Image 1 (cartoon, rainbow, N blue to C red):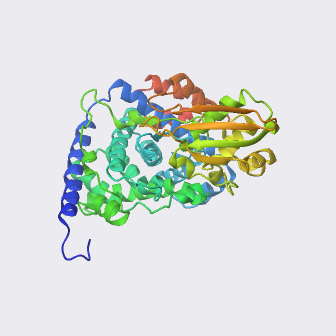
Image 2: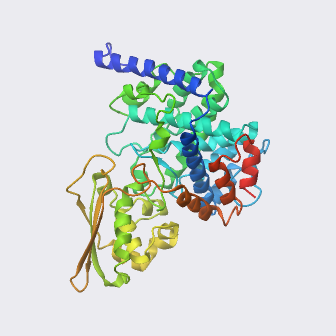
Image 3: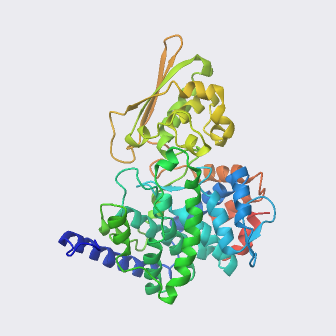
Length: 466
């Protein structure tokens, strides 16, 4: 674009639409920040908050997380913000955001946006909760900022989708989510919020998606780096240090090669009781990539019928295109295991579970899982339908005696079409946090039901981490 003497007319138009769309989105956000969230949106934002807190805590005992967080906390500064790990670990707000950001996607149990790859909560919350604790902001401020920042982040992701698994969303949108949440919590005006987003859009990174599939653990660092970059964008924007007005287009179209759909920046913005993007999220109870979940659920159905994994001769998986891409057969890291279709279905067949232990370090060398991994055959599913049935799976276990048992799942539970109940999610949160923070389950219930409305976030998180 810079080296071309003239810009093609469609590019001029798309670039202009990026600017005008972002200005309308920002104007909506500043106005929405002054209003209370509709109750159903507040509850939904609470579930996203609690899901991501539990995901951080669940990963905090991993040796690599603990060691990496110790490195992040070496520097000095005013230690006033909690790292969500065992013990009284205090840090500066930026250190805490980076440390919690390192853990938030590690267990692969954080919430995500179902309409396309984007885990907006994981990008927003590490920086947001650190700032809220340091500034003694309220729980209500956190939830409002989360819901609106989620809207902005998801709309940017919709406007600049990756049409193949090239750049991972944790890299592409991390700094935008973090910076936006910070600016909203700080009650930035429209100009500062706009400038924050344009700056943050240039601070994202080009993390390749194959690092998740093949297990490059640096993928889990991207949400940590995004939190740090978010602070820089939000801190400097009031000084006039911003990106160009069309930075979104310049980064995502000229830089990453996305096909722009900038109309999504501002079309059908939530008004009154209108739907928020955060309502299109999904939750996970299986500790692996969501693209495997239909196959996991079908495999769990078969595990109820065939109790002996030694009876299985081989496994056939009919899956969608993104499931076909998850074909690593001998994962080298826990991340690769979570993004391996052969490992996921083999672990369920061997262990009758898709919980964290089915994807831990021991699982990588478990002989029963490994035997079954090597038998898995991946085939394209022949009936891919519109969302929410766009990620189906059929699983066939061929037994040693020649018998063939099968199960099919069109859409995994957890999305808006088949949501987990609030009770089920509260049980998930409690189970993931009980060993580290015994009080977290009860505090989670009080946050969800609104009993802590008006409380300072500092008091809420202090109670959560008892």
